[in-house]
Image (cartoon, rainbow, N blue to C red; front, side, top):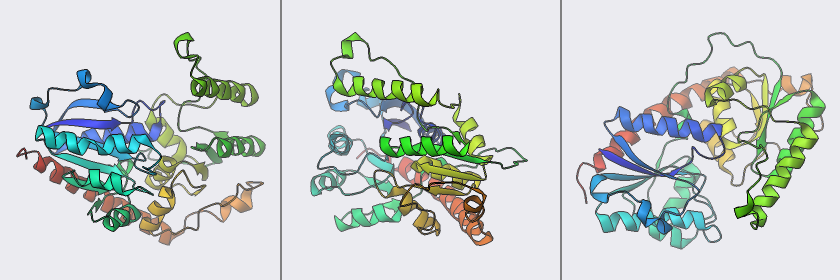
Length: 337
């Protein structure tokens, strides 16, 4: 079965979580008899690149990797761009499926478009509930970072605290400061190396602002701790006694490595929704960044045996669900609609 993937997030500035998502998604497809023949990146509007689209006669399935794109659709054009792939699939007589998605605070117009998809799979029960409120059913399979067991070091001596960033720049700045004050290591989920946008793009205020922000950050804090591969980031997380983060995929990797953590919410309540599905509730959610991270703070946040048991059960269920989902969506491509 020949699969075209849209919203390929792997190019997202070296985002460790997105790299793992794409690795696992492609591996699932291949394990269940599919072949990825086309990948379209998250940051390009497919509608304006008709000359870059594949020969649709050579595609059996369009798979949309939703991740954190489908939220606040009334004000975010990227959400609607992905949702319009349903109509494209209908016009080309190709099944279109949504997988690995959060749905949050979307308008009726987005769900009318998602109604043209052949199936929906979302990352948490809250997303499924939103879909149901608009008359659509969605299967629930947790994020693709959890789809396989990752080979971790046999012996993991945990020490110290690790900090990662947030999608919110102000939160990232405060987490950096706290990491520095605590003598802890800080590793952002995405590359923050200042890159001059070049003279062709210098008129883009957003690009110049991004460069300036990265430049000033590096001048203040020095170069970020970065790894050349996502696997190294997983090992880094797994080596810590505690992780403090504002990133969804850092939390999924903490679950993967059973590393204790606390978090500040992302741009949607997706971390909280995930942890409620795990059975951990809201106990690890921070409403404010702590003024100090000391031994007492670290000790009180270590996992209990009950929490470890819930995480283990969730991982087993998620991996089984991921394989069922892959098998089901690839079966849809057996007969073009």
